[in-house]
Image 1 (cartoon, one colour):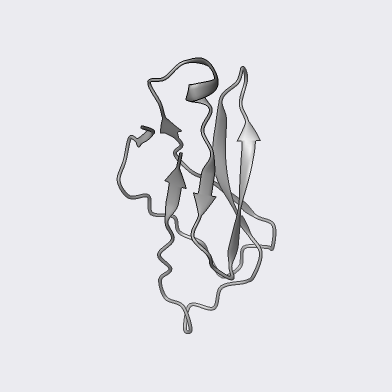
Image 2: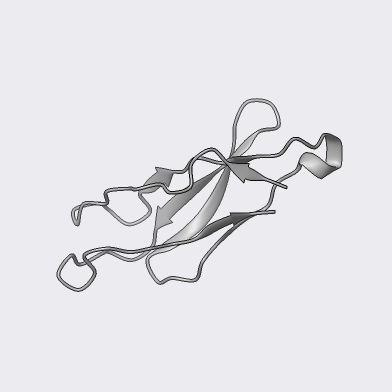
Length: 86
């Protein structure tokens, strides 16, 4: 099964960040080879971010959060999102 090298990632998103700002995430790895090593990522439902997948050199891909709605710190001092890999 895919494994993340860290259980939790913290990202600081200033209120001044523009829409479509990107925040790279640590991806998962899988010991399988070939077709079985291809990872699919999914982000928990939320109104602020969407998930994009960026290709690295070679076949590696990594997940990136993309800001789709500005965050008001008074209304949302902290967000918890879940990224899964299969």
